[in-house]
Image (cartoon, rainbow, N blue to C red; front, side, top):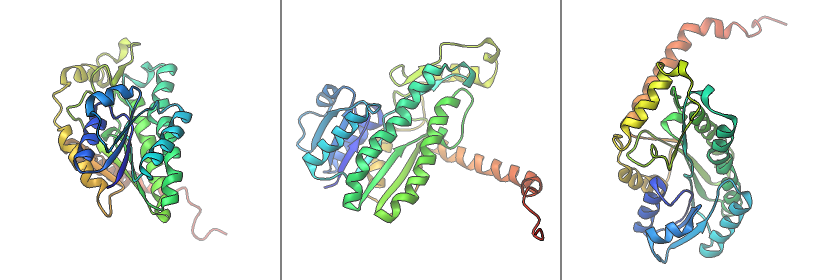
Length: 280
């Protein structure tokens, strides 16, 4: 039996992953701002510990980690899932909106990770799974600030993978595309109210309309992702990056091709800034 610690477990991917982990016979420490909702959703399962946790509160994160170890003795898999989106052009986002988003999507992830890692280091084992997005690999108009938080998660994950590998701890960053969850609902998505007229007929403005019209019409099946997460967590050699969804795979391939072409076109200027090889 493996022990999971999952943030944002009351709905969306978090709830589905919690359910699949319990079905697989694992134990789950499920956290959410409102733990009462967890009890209603999963009942009094013997392998479930429901804890209230605001990931932006470092003291709560430390207390939740300690409670997990006290109940189950260890934490094998950390899933940093808590987060939400922000839709709007970069200029349209207010400082308050940006700081609030980073407090959950980046600083909250860091607080929970720092709370769990001492226990994994003591075990010399564990798997940190950070939920990113296709927007963590390729940014999109209208999602710039949100994507920047996921780019941060990707950078942190790459470094952590190198830092933790010698200690027996694995790291994977998960990159879902558009899945049919409640991500585009008001409960998971903030839309910047300060709309600027100049952006209305640009890709950033069009994205507002796209998001409103495609809610619950996304191509990805969240239940299939949740089942795949169990396979990922139980893999002997999990990848550093795990894209989910054909749209994510297509976006990654397109960006890689674009970057390669641009690098080839500008290679001569790029390498011209080195000291000459025969320089003293």
